[in-house]
Image 1 (cartoon, one colour):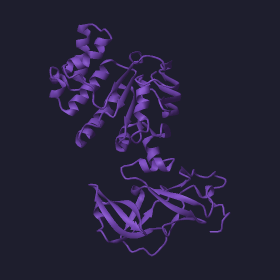
Image 2: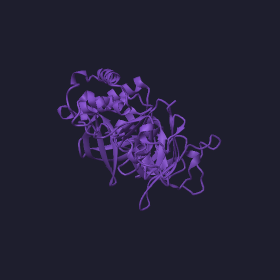
Image 3: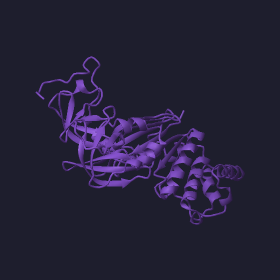
Image 4: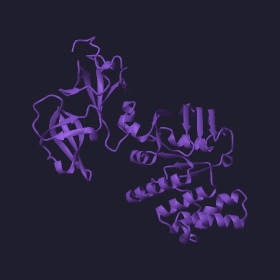
Length: 373
């Protein structure tokens, strides 16, 4: 088993800078786990601390049931791929792949065999005598992966390994990397600031902010039900619309419109309560018809952005921008009137920055009317 368990993990730098703050996290054996968050949130520090390149200030790190908190990096049975690949420029591809095996004092013949086998598995056989400067970015990345694979580690640690590739190559590389991880079954922790990358590749995601874990879940869970406005605004290539509103008897008053309460929350909110109404652009239906009824946000098209097979439409609603993803066949023009109808089964409410969870079944279906609507 090569699960990873972090208990009360802390990292404090001189001057009192707290990079990791009492983290509790369990990564399952064979899982592809992504650490996601903005710059400075602590995700790379966490990866380096798991690897032993940073010393934990407090707490414990277990890999495969063994406490490795005080163990040297070379004895943790992990392999790390860095953002810049960290290849030795004076070595050939074959020598780079075999270097970790040399450090482990493996015999020259066995080392050559394993290096050749690994190079073949990653399609690098024809590049064996080249040096890093003679390789493309994608080829360098594969050499770095081959070097990590050659050791047959318990755990792979990836620190933004795709960030130096162009857009097309990144798409190809993430597909290749996910397929490779599935075939090898090696527990993998992958650091990225790219939401699309994390959503596409990971079995589970941890969103970090200020050295803390803000949410841990599957890509679908984190995308559909972010547990805070921070996660909601960070996750997704098109950020969630977060709109101030007021709870009514059976609706939410948002930008002059009466929108249906999100499913399941009627017993968890009070009429008159101030909330934030969250709805992703993907879960809003667009209509160019001049609206005449409640249940829709009405306004004027301010911006239309081409997404390829769809358009991102920004509607000006009383001075507030609300975005919706619109089918390519329904492209509006700037200045057109329109209405947006959010899906109640995909809408969310936030109170003081945190998600309002569905009410208990015994109270669901009624709004607490402590304040007259």
